[in-house]
Amino acid sequence: GAVVSQHPSWVICKSGTSVKIECRSLDFQATTMFWYRQFPKQSLMLMATSNEGSKATYEQGVEKDKFLINHASLTLSTLTVTSAHPEDSSFYICSARTVKDEKLFFGSGTQLSVL
Amino acid sequence: QKEVEQDPGPLSVPEGAIVSLNCTYSNSAFQYFMWYRQYSRKGPELLMYTYSSGNKEDGRFTAQVDKSSKYISLFIRDSQPSDSATYLCAMSPLNAGKSTFGDGTTLTVKP
Image (cartoon, rainbow over all chains, first blue to last red; front, side, top):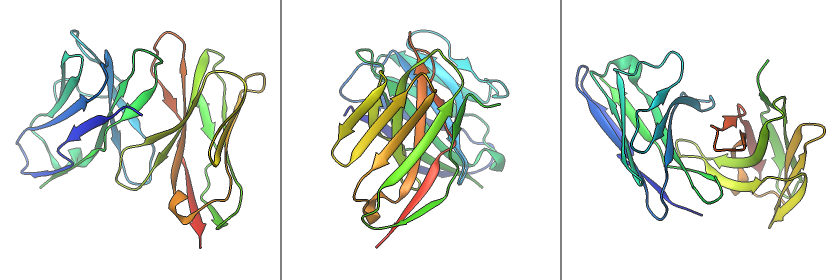
């Protein structure tokens, strides 16, 4: 299957700082990438849909000024958590969809802990 | 009512058992059906992908889709302790719409 690389796998930061998470499709081009948040023992919660070259589409209740998404190329999308607070601590996962057959492949996730 | 309902579990079976994981859906627009396996604190891994009614087999895994009943299943034969994980069903419409996920079923296979 296709490979999606997500970095970092975990990050600890102080309250008020910003954190950037990268999501790369290594062996395919992805015009669409997705960002999710997942709390322990819960399913994936879609945060936003990221389309290459255009603004991201955010799900209801997700603050676009807090969670900045950039999809500047066909293989890279970034999520920046701005002015992070302890309530932003969570597991963040990205996915990328193949153009050819619309399969969805996931990154390995990033555990964010805000102190 | 959710668009996708997944049998909640948790499910605990002895090694070697046949496991059945199930999801129902209400949106007739769904055309792509996927099953993912997720280990704790890891991203989901695509196990099965299909877009037609019927069965699709891959090793010990069989995905079954019944579009007329809006029901999909994943069967795991000869289950192994390494199959212990959370399984997520997912569906998406034609024309690159976003996928909708079930809430997941946690499976434990006991040696």
